[in-house]
Image: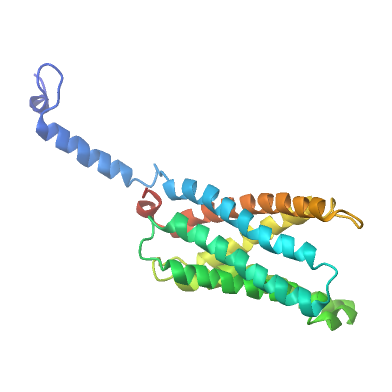
Length: 243
């Protein structure tokens, strides 16, 4: 005796409207299944943000080399402004990638927060060679302690600033702080590991800039990949699936 559910299909194998509706419901349920994630946002985020950070980093890379021999009174403000520009370009790229997934996210606040955080990070990063140069003459232990605090503050700067905007659209925004900190730690390690051995005294400016830009691209790819994967920890799958 055949199951009565076969009445939902015609004898030629085509599904009835009722069966088609049931199939659509099943597919919608499967789309929400956490075991079958799509993560469309992550695939958009990585190339867009890599491009944005690579372009943005080119600004302080060029300014830094151009002002390498300049006095601190010139180099510091120039690099802080260049850093703010890098942050603005990075923030714009990130906001563009998030536009469809998080339509309620304020793009202007995201860009401005990222630019301000980047300027703050460059201000701290330039401290030992400019406005806080006396710390380099302190005994080793306090010098290491202060420099370590500066490094932690730099790594936390962008994630903390962006958290203030991200928290308005997701309850798990707090994770973004440590996600971005680890991503920038890895990205800066990649940059320094690539560029530092290749830079040396007497090098032509175009070559030095080229090394910096290529290292910046590797850094951008590293940070965008790690932060993109980090989005999977703080955004619901329904948002990650949006196209």
